[in-house]
Image (cartoon, rainbow, N blue to C red; front, side, top):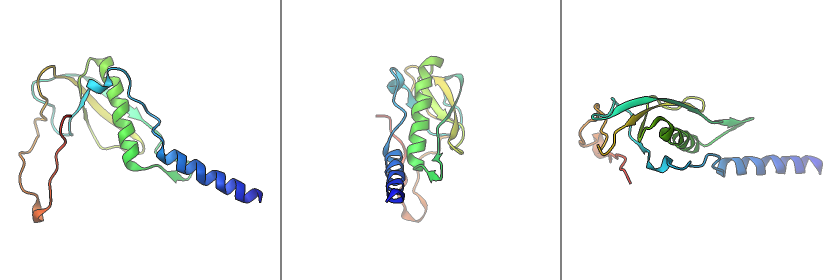
Length: 134
């Protein structure tokens, strides 16, 4: 009976951990835009770099990759106002729960990465998507 209780508790903990968002948006962070990786945005002034990290696994349980990425982005946006950055850009993909972002002040300028590629048809007729600011 005791083993069932422990196993049930372990499963419940894993389920709760996978569904929880542990990182919340700080005041002012909602105004910080996120642009896709690429070259530095044109017309913007670099304010610094932001390094963030979250737990990507708990004991033997691997957390949802999308949730980890979302939390890393939220943490980076939370740091933006402290750098007077209104735009952040990932410098590399997340690795083991860690990621680096560049912070920029773009003001009224709509930031566009200098390495942005014009939209074109995706190979094989597949759909191609781009993030929108909203």
